[in-house]
Image (cartoon, rainbow, N blue to C red):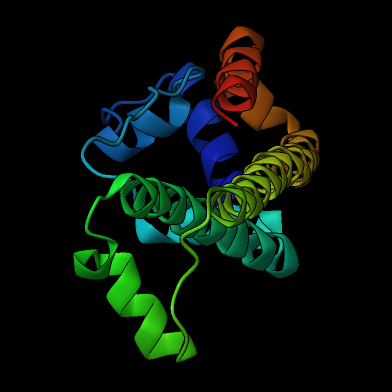
Length: 180
C-alpha cells in the first residue's frame, strides 16, 4: 500500500492540478531520498547482532583465551618478581603458594626456570588461540552480515533503486566491509 501511495504521489506531481501538493506528497515524489545519518554512541543492539554473527562457541573460546592471556602474563611477571626476590618468604608468591598448595615454593634455579617456562608456554598458547579465534570470529561475522545485507539490498523493489544511487549503495557496502 505504501509503494502504491508513493507511485500515486509521483503521478500527481507530474500532472497539473489546481491545488498544490502537500509536503508529504512532495517528499514521496522525490526520486532521490536524502540519506540520514545517526550520531552518538553505538547501540547495544548493533553489538548483539555482531556477537550473534560471530557465534556463541567462538565467543566463549575467545573470552577464555583473553582471560588466559591476562592471567599468564601476570603470572609470568609475578614469578620473575619472586625469582629475583632476596627474601623469598616475604614475597607475595610465597604466601600465595603456601596457602593454596600447602607446600613451600621452589627456590632452586632449575625449578624456578621450569615454572617460568610453563607460564610462558601457557601465555603463548593463550595468545595464539586468542588471536586466532578473534580472526576466525571476524571472518564468520563478516560473511554472515555481508550475506544478509546483500540479500536485503537485492530484494529491494525497483523504486528503492531509483531513490538510492548505485554509488551510495556500493560505498555503504565497501565502508561496512572495511569496518568488519
